[in-house]
Image (tube, rainbow, N blue to C red):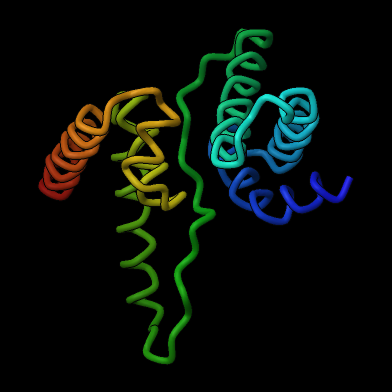
Length: 166
């Protein structure tokens, strides 16, 4: 049990945020994380230490997809505002409103990306995984991952510029 507890302390918060990104629901996110940790108990003897985090992420994503299939609910994934800004002494209500609108614009643009590109952007910028780590997780080459990230950035830039001109 100490091993499971250590894994939870290492990866629990990231797993929860990853699950919450998909579900937009605290209870469902907690359920997905719990299921992932239960699933890893069976797979643990076959995993190397560097594979644990990716196994948890993959289990969470697959659990979410399975749940969506069962419910026949194919809504678009939306990005909620779990990534909060830091308060600073120079924040005024106007700057706060501007920052919130910029964040919403970014999240809307991320939502409009193709699924694989959206996931790479999420893993790189919000989960802070390296390109190598994402490539291992997605089972792509380093170059494929880097290209997907590059194309995602271009698509985000175009979408945000387009949204600002509307």
